[in-house]
Amino acid sequence: MAPKTRHASRKARTPREVYLDTSAFIAFLDRSDSYHAIFRRAFATPPPLVTSALVVAEAHGWFLRRYDTRRAKEFLSFLDMLPALTVVAFDRAELAKQRPILSRFGDQNLTLADAHGLVIMGERKTKMCWSTDRHLGLTGVELIIHT
Image (tube, rainbow, N blue to C red; front, side, top):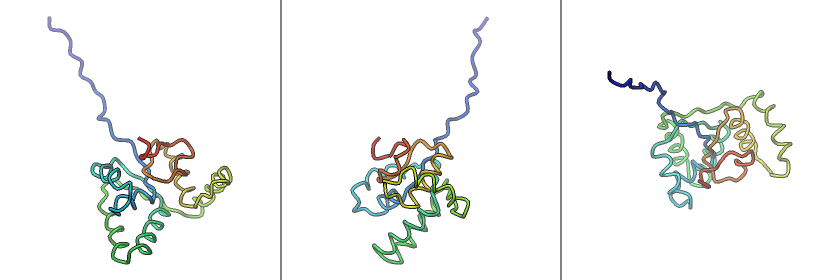
């Protein structure tokens, strides 16, 4: 009698969702950034990604001020090319969620975009953040630059 074979019915492991901060977009799209190589590798095969509408606005403004309208539009086009990017809207309900984070980390000079990122990562139980900003690691989420 032949031994029984086990047919593993394991689900294919899906990569965990990663939070994207403004600095990740800048480091990837600006070749002069000192973290460019790290983010070039990361964006080569990205996992599911999530970011805040505030991050999108902040990054767009950065490319507009640092470079010009063309580069700001290229940034928006890049977002369209990301296959699995979720952008979390920012409305009055989201604004209310920021107060506890801003209060808890009152000594850190967090931007509203940073606070929204911390809230999103907490709600979604995110374990990894693509950022060069230490503020995004305040709640224990690992930053890509430390891996």
